[in-house]
Amino acid sequence: MATKREQKRARALQILERLDAAMPEAEIELDYQSPLELLVAVVLSAQTTDKRVNLVTPALFKAFPTARHYAQATPAQVEVYIKTVGLFRNKAKALVKLGQVLLDRHGGLVPKTRAELAELPGAGQKTAGVVSIHLGTDKAFPVDTHILRLSKRLGLSTHAEPDEVEADLRNLVPEPWWFKGHQLLIWHGRRCCDARRPECHRCVVAELCPKKGVPKKKS
Ligand code: SF4
Image (cartoon, rainbow, N blue to C red; front, side):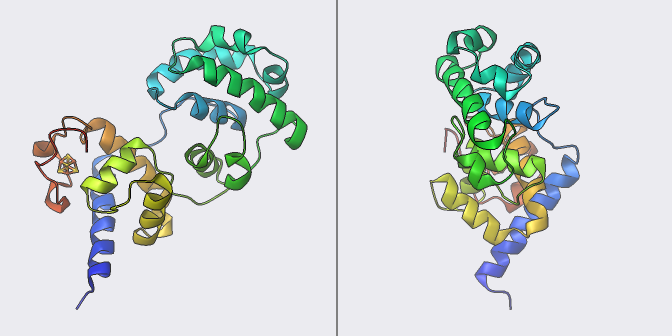
């Protein structure tokens, strides 16, 4: 007979398989064409929608094509391009510092490992995880606000801190599913399991969700 742990693992996998069947096209929604553009876009996406980031990045990437361009700019010069993005002043400062650190410590290139990425200005574990899995340089299950919420609702983690939730997900979900699982949970959070109004009546994992129909407010 399967232990509770095994049952939980099987349920987690079933959830991802169902989400994958419903949204096989799930992928990162930020536009980028190089590691630097990916890193900058992910830094900009904190507390801002990807759609909004994608509106500003074409002009930003054109004006700042290399780490040196950011390093030699003033925050005010970067702000001009990102002022419709949330926390743009802090992010402009971070991008200038980011350019300087990339130049000083990494030869102007984006480092590959999550540990190195997490030390960059404006980055953290989530940003570093997202960048490294999309560069294909590390295995991770980075946890954003959607994954945090869904992990709790779906009973996959009882923790509140992203690092702890990621550890739970990595324990429950087989490694080949980490990358896709990250995308799928974000897409499900954006398209169905909304923070305020989850649409449980049309949710493809409702049968597997202990909170089906329960969340009426942010949880
Ligand atoms: S059943 Fe409702 S709360 Fe559970 S995952 Fe689906 S939308 Fe979210």
